[in-house]
Amino acid sequence: MPFTEEEVTSILEKCEVYKGPNKKKLVVLTKFMLATGLRISDAVMISKSNITEKGKEGWMVELRTMKTGTPVSCPLQPALVKSIMALDSENPFWSDKSDLEDATKNWRKIFTKIFENAGIEGHPHQFRHTFAKRLLVAGVPIGYVASLLGNTEQICRKHYGKWISERQAAVNKAVKSTWT
Image 1 (spheres, rainbow, N blue to C red):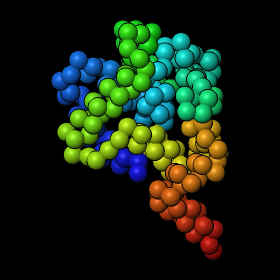
Image 2: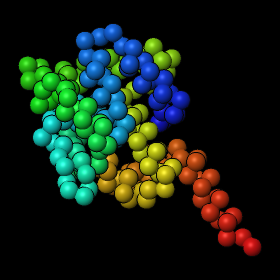
Image 3: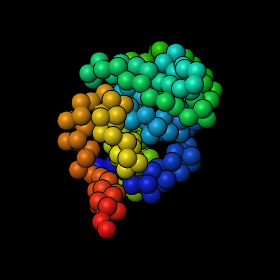
Image 4: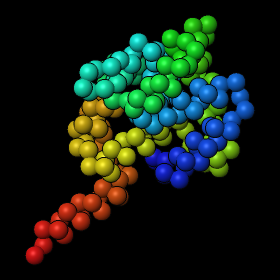
């Protein structure tokens, strides 16, 4: 299930008061995952070189997903880019001294604590579901959402469409608007 907006607010609040050594990175990683829908392994492995300015398109993150090798590209808010670039290394969410799998496990443990502190039964993959839900509720065509997630339209519909009651309400409203 995607996080509710109230849960997202609570998670971000708990990230802000987190006492661990990765507090600043935790806040940025959380916002990055919410803004891109990347799986935690893809978000953790990101390097600053994956984030580039594309003229009129603005800032973009581009990579091949670890799970499927699918290329994905997603726009980023300038404030988020600034936060990522302010972090201390080329690979802001993992150290060259650690293995990526260990880094991902470490972040999962941190998120487990954050979710517990927020009183939420959650998993970092739910940020991906939340990203998809937000886009679908905003009326973004499912094919576009699938492209951003590195999925097929069928997979996206199967995994994300069932959670979008708000989308059905918008469809109902559109149909009713045609009644005379």
